[in-house]
Length: 386
Image 1: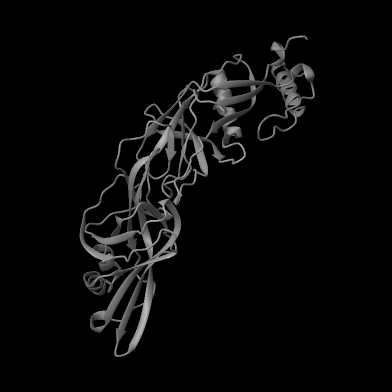
Image 2 (image 1 turned 90 degrees about the vertical axis):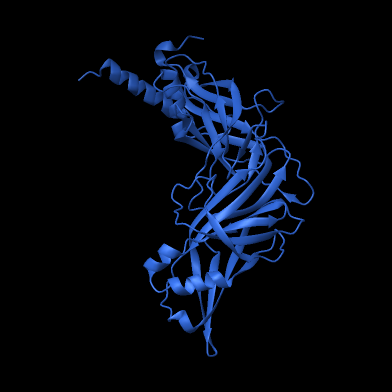
């Protein structure tokens, strides 16, 4: 049986691809087995880049963000954490005749901002039921009395202990009889900053409430993990004019580019390069760039849609490289007109667990400029003689 014209096309295309070596991370070393059909590199500057704000979901956060920060590039932010302790995993005695004490133990995981000034936190009762499923960062829950106040501590202290007052231990004693009573009456508490110029990220999986109960010289204890966790991060000043991408508060960037390739070009690889503006830290302050950024397509309403690639910060280049088979296929779809051309969304890979930020160089900045690199070949029918 003779091969059809379509079959010959795919066979030839396969042989072309097999003649190409794998592209390295920068795309600088791409060779073809056929000089006549060697891939070309199209470098496209970004058309535009601008900041947008969103309402990130912070429920089920692994880090509890608490504190207040202020920086010339990102403005002033305040972070609070909402938590609910779990029902005891062990059978407790009837605590009616026991003396009960409780402490919240917070294990530090990260620091953002000024580490020189002391910090202080308070714990306030939450007065209604809530869930951390799809919990937006700008949520405010109704709260009641103050349950506890921490001693002044340093941002780098590994453990913060906050005694919980008599009103909460009485509530715990009366509600611990059954899991149903516990769930209906214990709505958790909010961690609020009282003083300080930094925000602390506490490890939500390792932090816990410690309960001691004692009667007639016999003392025992139980630890309650924090089963529900969410962060509320609010902007206290206007959004910055720079192109800032930041976790927690939902600062994202929209980037656009215009392809200039033949309508039938075969895309082998696409790499989007974004660079960070160097940040000069204030003495005593800790600011880490966002370790990973994610690149998404956008919907008609500007929401993230399809994940195209994730870029990790590269110290040597001072920026991020986004490249994946999915991204290359997306660029191919644009060339063929199979997908609408909309701005791409750049956002922190995990918005719920961090306040880290990065200021991106816009297209009009000095070198290095953000760009899109596309490695492509012409279809066999479009090849020209040299």
